[in-house]
Length: 179
Image (cartoon, rainbow, N blue to C red; front, side):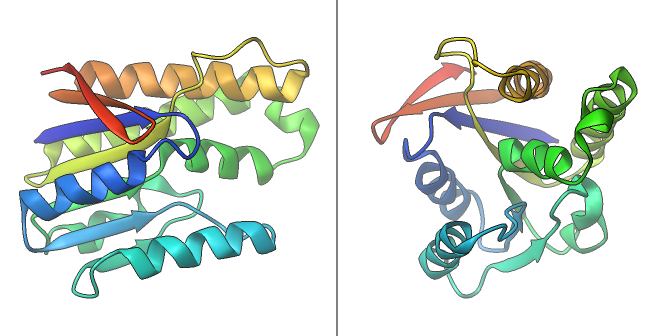
């Protein structure tokens, strides 16, 4: 198992950097997409990502089920997951407000994150995971934003603890901060 975590702000260049790491790490790459087209802008963003990656890469869309790539991932040298923050957002968008506010929902989501980290531990492939860094801004003004930041911050910390290497990307410039 080898986990590389790439974090950064929105539009920081983290996905491009992670794609370059995947190109360098192996020829057989599986791109695990978590993005869902909730609106036209997100659909355009997904299309730009598809156009940018090499045609020979495999791809699977997992939406809110992060571990769903396990059955196909074994045929690849590298698994690139883009991204954990979108996965957390998908899990939020899939339930009513009363449910996401519950401690049970948060615990279930963190248990899913732990299941994914266990999958990574068992995986013979290099896994590169992209995520958004939520710890650089102020505290969100609404409960939903605070919940998202709290949960994603927890997921990111768990992934960073397990990762052999962690990069932070700012303005297109990657900084190795672990490993």
